[in-house]
Image: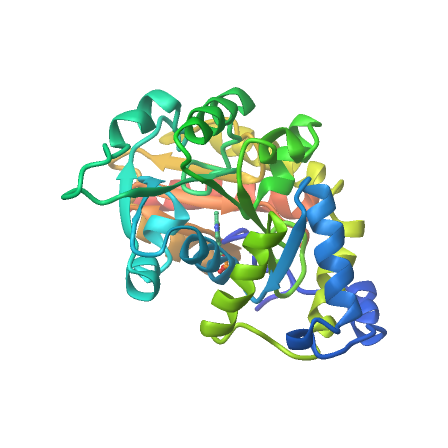
Length: 347
Ligand SMILES: Cc1ncc(COP(=O)(O)O)c(C=O)c1O
């Protein structure tokens, strides 16, 4: 890829920095299946602490962490999920395939479910209906454009669910972004849920890893589910060290990604035919008017000009700011966008 390539396809495309690699090379390790990897243990402790949870469990990916969470919480039951959630769209029907879970998608407004949306989907306790075993939320919401979940909405769902003995799970792959963008501690959201996952390989720039956090007995059970998925690893401190480095060094700087996302949205919004909402965090969604080219042509043509984006729908493009894109990269992306708009309008 050309050195000038501005890769905005996702915040997962970043490469570990020299300092992060250095931390990896120095990592103390042990056999994590025996709970003896000191770096993993430290990471789990630090992350659980940030999330106000008793315990944590390191895993290879956000998808595995989500699947271990839902599999531990509600095997054989029904889980209410947001209709545009990662759990519903991008996890290969794994909840059904691996844990016999039926997902019940409910559409929220901009990815945000309120109790009023969730309540009608809760099954009455009748012997011929599935049991509602989980409510799953996502913050920030990826397909809703990095949308931050309002704390009040999550608090209401948490309180109502608790009253009915239904656990609440949070896919917090990008919860770090919500915390930095609002200035709130992550516990503002996590105190209302029973378990939560966070990712290290997105905005935080680590090459691998996610952590599931929750009560100690839940995490003990989740260890068994992780084992059954083939997800238990050995001297895994090598990669946990990168995650620990990311948590200690790369959280506050997410504010730069958010600032750049706003600048990108503003620049693209001034181009004819582009409809862009100001982003909450680092995900910019661009809706291209009919007649100004379709999502696939935009993705292809921008890539030819050195800007990577992702077509999320026939007329929708996603651009995600990240650790490897600086201010100059954003200005270049806006300039290229303008050039491509002219080209696609003329074609
Ligand atoms: C909201 C959300 N949850 C979970 C995941 C899964 O993470 P991974 O790609 O590490 O499996 C993603 C990945 O983009 C995501 O956006």
